Amino acid sequence: MTADPADPEEAAVARFDPVLRTLMTFGLVESDGVEETNADEASRQWHLTPAVQRRLNSLASPAPPADKVVYFGHRCSSCGEHGPTWFNGGEFLCSACRERAATLVPSAGAIER
Ligand SMILES: [Zn+2]
Image 1 (tube, rainbow, N blue to C red):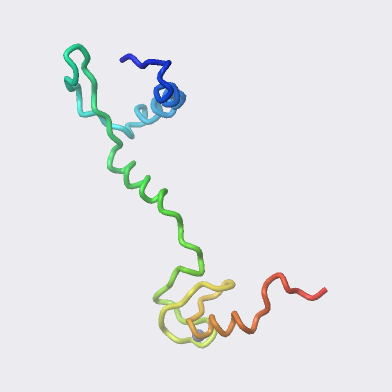
Image 2: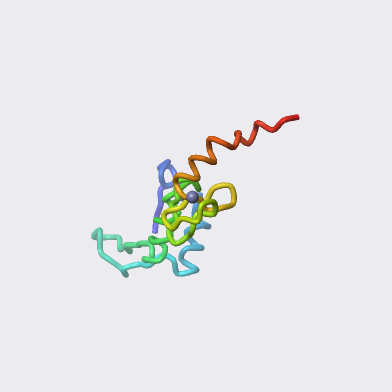
């Protein structure tokens, strides 16, 4: 295996050698075996295992903000209605109670001194 250290891309990738060795050590990458790509050089094709690919997908998608997550199967803590609720200030509230709470309760920074 020869990598040209003068190639900036090869040099940048070489900085991750410890990470790449770790991936190989823990079996997180797989090779398809030796494949003839050039007349004089045999190289393997590497790819991440399916479990790693699934994990990367979940890491790449950011968690939605708490006020955007809708919960089903909870009663509204305020009116007791069954339906979609949002986790708001430590309790599950339905849409109507959530809007009422937002208009009645002053913003968190507006505490009297
Ligand atoms: Zn409610």
